[in-house]
Image 1 (cartoon, rainbow, N blue to C red):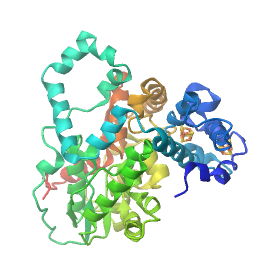
Image 2 (image 1 turned 120 degrees about the vertical axis):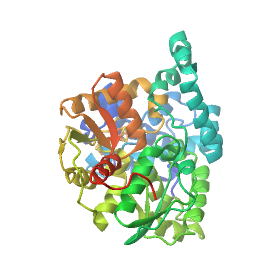
Image 3 (image 1 turned 90 degrees about the vertical axis):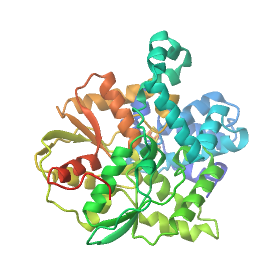
Length: 428
Ligand code: SF4
Ligand code: SF4
């Protein structure tokens, strides 16, 4: 992989045409030139040409870190400027030179780098949410002292008592008429925050005669990628490749669009590694979103009704990352009773972008407000999506904007439809 300073030929392709203006959420929210792909590319080019110092100018760092990495500019760009790759490369260079601040390092290495610590951390949040500490923090003004972190406190969902791994039997049963075999990637958010969604995905696969194994896994590495922690990202990628290569399967399924993007990127991440490069290339091709996989292999259409008006939000990592957008809609439209309403700008970033809604809370809320306005106009009561990070951000948006609707994963709606036709309610 090329480093930031080896990417001059990529950055000179930006001819400042401004086609990215219409689609860049940070530019639309701020109106600032340097919050636009064109402006960011200009700053990065000046750093490459050594006119500005990438490591010393806080204003430049501000614009590099305020990019959502949503990729909308790349789709609109007639010169195929790879802005997200350039921004990631700049962040990796800054991290290599200066390191990340201590809380970020602790989060990335100590918590997300270790599944046991992550589960303990989730349990501590659950204690905070249920012991009265949350009430006290909210009513005493303590959250106000925490700045962005305090403002973002309401984004976290209620943490369930048991993780997905605590709930699952050690071995999942084979369906009676097994057609396919897949491995499920239990990402950090799905395992700790949304085990109900993960169980719905597993049931949907099993109901469609697909045998599922759930190998041990590490974090997919997407948060590390976003903060330029490339060595840690590679370490996690290798761990996952070791865990998953023990299983002979047709596909790797993840119901987290961010994990799907992360796992998919292993091929490029490890392309120079003689041992892991070929394994990663094969692995990345097998990574699928569950809607994508079910549409590909064919899914059962016998379902009970789900009488609701539903709209769909495209996660950036799904629509522009792994290029999945038609399949979740196909699944939703196949559910009897469900009235699908397309919203305006369905593929615009919701402003969640991993931890962006914590580090850039106010800007993230401005971007979210646009999404909420578009959703409200549909009159739908359910806002479906395919990523846990979006689920959290959208759920928060519905609360803040007092919209009487619920954020839900596409797999939960499919599971509901199957159960309304008598499918089993437990993972086998
Ligand atoms: S659309 Fe592409 S070439 Fe045009 S200004 Fe934006 S990044 Fe540059
Ligand atoms: S990735 Fe998204 S936020 Fe970043 S410059 Fe491109 S459109 Fe703007």
